[in-house]
Amino acid sequence: MLGLKLPTDPRWVNIVEKNIEEILTDHAYCEQKATSTAISLIVSFPEYTALVQEMVALVKEEISHFKMVHDRILEKGWTLGRDRKDDYVIQLITFFPKGGSRTTQLVHRLLYAALIEARSCERFRLLSEELEDKELAEFYRKLMVSEANHYTMFLGFARQYGDRKEVDKKWNDLLEFEAKIMKNLSKSETIHG
Image 1 (cartoon, rainbow, N blue to C red):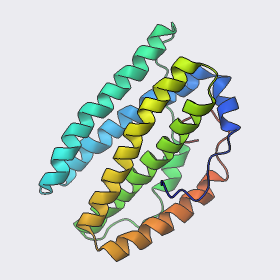
Image 2: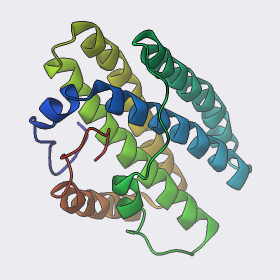
Image 3: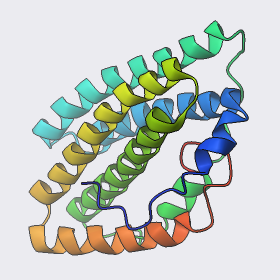
Image 4: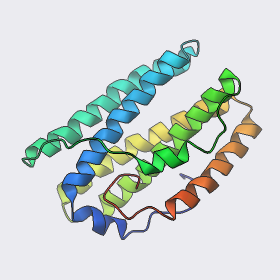
């Protein structure tokens, strides 16, 4: 369903389980960045009313996910660590050239967002199926459903605002590029890395 060209190596969960504090910190910042992305889309493209309406709802949802993850961190007696670079996203956003029309820029941002959500969904599925901590596994199962909805929403908007054939080609090319990135990742306790 997600269309990812390279699935995550299931051994990634073993890395995560050795440092749950790190994955929760990274996850919290991913939710915060998703909130920021939605706000940025509102600020950058206010004339797309349907998108703005969905992004307002997404801001509320993503910040509530941040709180849920932060609460888990606190329940374990930890504090939220500092944010760190997301090598996955840094590499991913180099794919499309900068510039172009406003519509092209919007489509590219929507495709990036769709792919980040798709990869998060896939990672959450793995965590929900493989984590020994069943309560945490269930937590990730619930979040997996949200990520899948976000992925389809962003991809749907890209197809709505851009030429469908062109958008689908860009999407497939981006998926191929992302698979190359993933070959060098899955070695750390981060959501995307």
